[in-house]
Image (cartoon, rainbow, N blue to C red; front, side):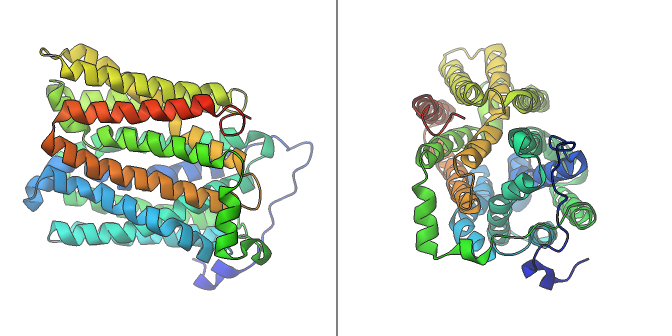
Length: 413
């Protein structure tokens, strides 16, 4: 494995020049590896959702407190993404990615043997810093190795891993937790992260970080990125969407309990996941040709599905079949959303400010996730499932409206 000194070395293995013959050729093995990295990281991020009840029982704490494992990670990623990205943006991408994966493996090992919830929360804070670095630099790494004409598809294929992890991660971790115990699930995550670090070293090309001249002062870099036309509306839509989604999704098991479909929890979560993958497949197929249409559908249909679920759960006699349909529709529309927001920022900030813009996106994204877990726990304990879903649906409607109004710069191509 490469030494740490490689982190700050120039790109010694240049990527072959793009010719007319290979101009549109996608480096599928590398793109699929990026997708595997994204899946593993997001699977680890979402583990507390699937292991919520098991961990709360095993550690002797409430489900609301266990849910803060999500907010601890996300808040840290939000706080650290921008400064760490600026500190590390000149380092080569491959060794930086390897270091992050090794860090994830070490964190998972620590959680496996942690005796109590507060130590686990502390370890997840370290996890959050690693997450912020990963998502600030990963899109730029992908963009460097895929043809310019297929950037949207490259990001879409990579974020299949994101959608698959958030869709299938909770039921997989729940199933494995029942079969092996929740601590064993964290150890499995550590082994996978270590394996991926080795695969990255062997399979991915070396890509240099940002030139020193691009880095500039922190104030200038942040201000320059924020002044890019269309970036602020894109960030606002992303923040409202992710806050609304995680407000409900972090507590999807209590939501299903309120909908009267807890007897089929695994089936419902798998249906959500399958629908999400269909949404990602549709997105990957047409994002470079119908980007605005996808943005409108992803946000609008997600909002409609969660509002419908809130209405169903609020009825005196809950209709389990209607709730099931609403959850599946939620998964279908949500599947393409991470790709839409990631690609939207990449299209708007396509230039020297890309890494900084992505770090701001990571901050907004993870702040929304953390607030969703935090506020969702408070709403769940204080007002119940219907109030939780109505707040979730309202925020998703706001996101859809911002996308609808952002046709000039933010959500157009």
